[in-house]
Image (cartoon, rainbow, N blue to C red; front, side):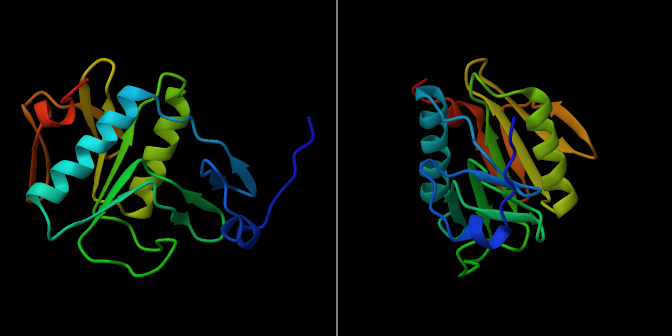
Length: 165
């Protein structure tokens, strides 16, 4: 297998469809969402726009998690202000990853750990097929046992996350 390394500048100057992530010189494909993934992503966007209009919601936004080495594309991220740049360089307030059926859990956990190391204070992992939600922090994945996902002032009822699935 031949592996071609790409510079971060080349990655950032290239439009990928669908968008891809940049990990240590490699351009990495993301598993495309299917209907449950897309619907869940849409539910987040709608909920934030309706209930927290002062926050900024960014579906599939490039975020440089390790300067010069890694750029990830969370399914949804939320910022307290508009960063006003094309590729975010500061940690978002909240990152949400939504599982697709082809996601490898080891890769997902690596990405969540990377977000935490980058300084993202709130990290959620959503499994639309099983209708389960998890928070990630201190290197641990914790299932949400309550009826709401919480991040600072944000209180999101799980029924809103899984609406229409």
